[in-house]
Image 1: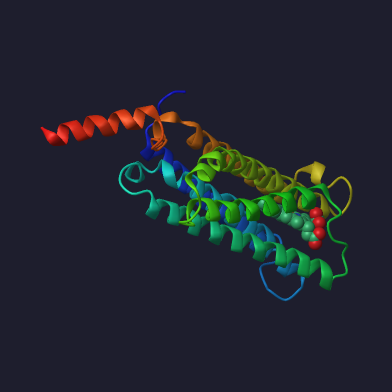
Image 2: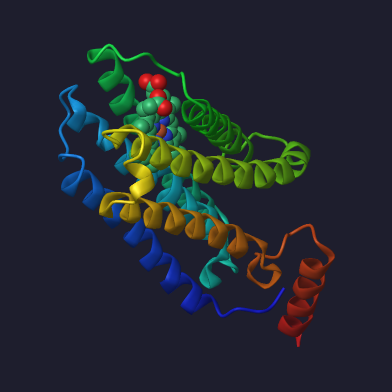
Amino acid sequence: MPTIPFLPYSILMGNLGILCLGLTIYWSQHWLGGLAWDGSRKMFNWHPVLMVTGMMVLYGTAALVYRLPFSQMGSKLPWKMLHAILALIAFISAILGLEAVFKFHNVQKIPNMYSLHSWLGLSAVLLFSCQWLVGFASFLWPWTPIWFRAIYKPVHVFFGSVILGLATASCISGINEKLFMRGKNSTSYSKLPAEAWFANVLGMLILVFGVLVLLGLAIPEWKRPDVNSQDFRQVKKYATLNDRK
Ligand code: HEM
């Protein structure tokens, strides 16, 4: 894996996250009729905005917290708390995003949970809720035994990436579905109007954001040394010896 400097990566990720969010809001405002919380079509428009905010931008940021260079040394507790708080805000945002689409469907008498997108999306949010609860119980609950934390940690890391993958797939399938629904006749999406161009680009940017979060998680140099690893014990031993000199 090539070594990439963290600063340009984090600037790129910040801009990309803001761009994804900005383009989703622009799509809702400019083409989909704007935002309102009243059971109308405008209420649906909160769904993509809150889902991209919560399940992509905030979730991705929470995942990368431990890669910040200044999180590498000292107590891990403040970083654990920041990770948990960002994930909680992401989760609340996702729940509000689901409320927006379910309420819209119920008020308009549209059936629920019929599409592949809705199955993928709900799986992502359900897994996320389990991940948050078990993560909190394992890493922030002071009475959890160390052996349980050690067993659960790789499971948490694995499912963290699975959820991000599911969230990315949900956003892309949701954008695609909305574009098909927007077509006045069966050929209009295939004529690639300006809105379809715009939303296709948004989908590609969301994909790039998701892939870059996974890349950031995979770079070994950015990982906080594990207190149980041999490397970390050697660094600690060396630092203690130096202190005694
Ligand atoms: C991680 C992100 C997302 C999740 C977890 C998610 C989840 C869901 C769920 C569970 C439903 C079913 C609601 C019901 O049946 O009443 C739904 C519906 C819908 N979503 Fe998403 N969604 C996400 C992102 C998006 C995005 C970015 C769009 C883009 C416009 C979108 C477009 C739609 C559309 C058009 C529907 C209504 C049709 C249907 O039921 O499939 N979604 N979403």
